[in-house]
Image 1 (cartoon, rainbow, N blue to C red):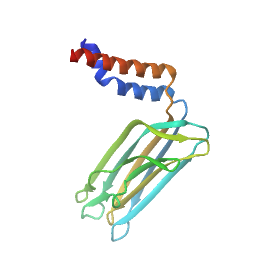
Image 2 (image 1 turned 120 degrees about the vertical axis):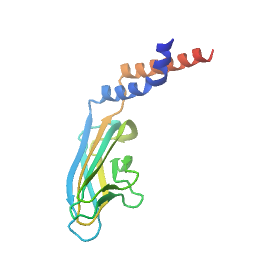
Image 3 (image 1 turned 30 degrees about the vertical axis):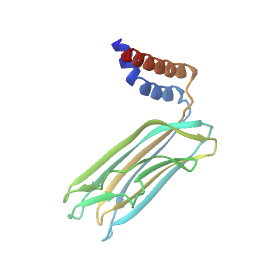
Image 4 (image 1 turned 135 degrees about the horizontal axis):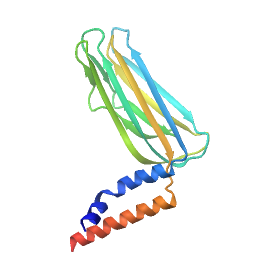
Length: 188
């Protein structure tokens, strides 16, 4: 009974990720990495994007992504990277529809002549957006860098075909049934 109870509560999520991996024969990856040095005397806004045109149909899409930022104080007064207004620092798009984003809760800062860093990822999920041949997947980085400082920014955005195989779909259904079965037994 304890085994069923454990399977029912936390087993469906790993199975969804497994189903994505099992069905991920078709995939596309957009990676971007840049070093930005602000040589001006005031903070500056940067906006970068990288696109990939799909060469095949993916159908319903899913995937994951990550963002890493290292800011370095070069001028000696402290350094920061922050978002532009309410815009996410990192946003991912499938066919011009935003499917995920990442933004630090506050600015990423560095002490005098030091470094500060931030890294995060969004885990594998179903985007619910169709990806067809010649559609574009895109990553966008938009941020403000303090005057006279440097930032290294890297991102990844993976898009996969999110159509569970019949075997993976059966595992998901079984896990859901085990979860319900375990809950009923606990309630009795």
